[in-house]
Length: 434
Image: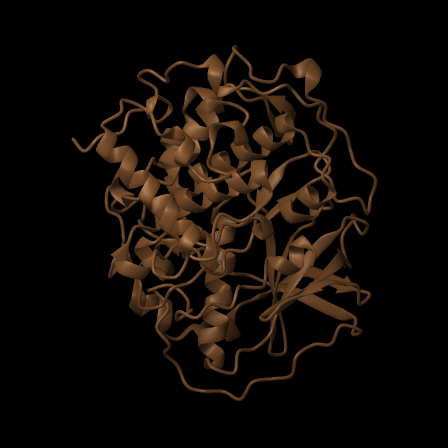
């Protein structure tokens, strides 16, 4: 399935799945309408959505009441989109089409419309409220590494979010081709950390980060998409120091990327969930396989082995991961040789710390020397945060890929440094019980 389809499909997990703690099901039941078919062409008209990010998303009451009436009162904008019926993909809750503006000067630029299907298990006003929330959160998450949400459109009972079009597909598309170099993978990992750092600094946790929800443009820019499970964990304006914990009563996200604390703790910090998912995406970038099916020691032997290795490392009282005498015990995909450098390897492991409160924050990961040294694709070309670059500009090419070929770009491979060249990480990484 293409990236855009994946952005609207969620894994089926045997634990309860639902929206965030903010989303209690209030409102009267309205009979659901029909689903649009793949062959239908569609027309969309945008609506004016009030800019009530602070009030509607941080208060359960205001986020749950009277939404349907508010939506009926929205003013229609002079923005129209149309589709010729081309469906990029279809998931359980939505399908995605390529659309074009019908009015205005620019009628050739491609956009993507995510058409939501009404849910049988939820009242219509709750359904509309959740889409409205997803749009508002995504609109406020404005950043080069976040997909731009352009308009919210309503046609009869159907709701759609119009977004920018990313021609190169999702991260799974890119990795399936197998032509992405180590330099390119490092670039994508840094872009992911940049995007998530921006979200967290603006009080937003994504909660469903995975390769399917990371899209790529022709310039090699990574874009985070699908904010259906996103949560506002604090209001930066009202109380910037508070963090709203999430309840595990309604667990949402994709099972292999969820940390173990969501199953065992009554409440969890959504920021730590995102960091965990970023680490597993980084592991996937360099190893092309899943670490485990579920982070549950009673259900998954791969995760059980990972936790046992962490426990043995903690008992060893080693100064750093690289100094651990039993380093060979890490399973494939978690060994130093599986990564471009021991710095990246250690960073991934500390982002996967089994104790959430000791897990690296996203800014700690982004500001680590090994990440700062990576040259990074951006809408403006090649960028780096360090003069000691890990991938010199003359070896990091940014080429547009022919349409139809889902590929990040042409990156020349650098020979990764092996762990034997590094005797210790020194003060860069320390793990202890103190």
